[in-house]
Amino acid sequence: MKLALIGDPVAHSASPNLHRGFLEENDIDGSYIAIRVPRGQGAAAVRRLRAEGFAGCNVTFPLKEEVVAPCERLTDEARRAEAVNTIFFGNQTIGANTDGIGARAAIETLLDEPVALKRIGVLGYGATARAILAELHDNDAYTFCWGRDAARVRGAERRFEANAWPAENPPEIIVSTLPPEAVIPDELMTALQRADFVMDANYGARATLAQTLNRDVVPGDAMLEAQARASFDFWLAHLAT
Image (cartoon, rainbow, N blue to C red; front, side, top):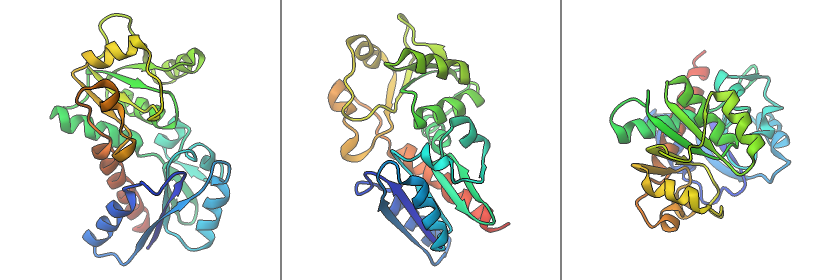
């Protein structure tokens, strides 16, 4: 069972170790490699992996949107997010998205209860943010969206029935999908300081939000592990059919 991760950068990724562990757990003879694929080359990379006999691949920044094109079928999660982070190569090339599942699972583990009716803010409106907003909406969370581009924020609010970021009474839970180098304005810094807990979708050396805020921040490791497990289960389910 040949599996891969494509994106740029990928050298820092924990996905290879996670998926190699899943292969061992399931007594599957397989491999999982990370392949650096620059922006603009995602679709070609997907077609190449299929031709080379890979069973599936994960997709990370900055390719999640451009690999939608070579997928012949999309799951509901991928269609709603307009982004793919998991691909299965079978009779068809099937694109899925497990980012939202991973975020929800990580939040619910921390809360030890469902996200339903929780006030959760999502920073960003890119591929990962959209997947999270869709998943939280489907699980009855009360969501808010923040971003610098007002038009894109309004689009996300309409698409996922999210709310405008409140000037007062900010959400108690905040998930940041912002890049490590993002500059955070003062008013958002205040909201992040007041939140009950903050989760950074970044992990490892890229998880810099805790230093920026000088407070405890949940790194993206739990989110990554949950979405990786969902991706692996997706591959196994389709291999069994």
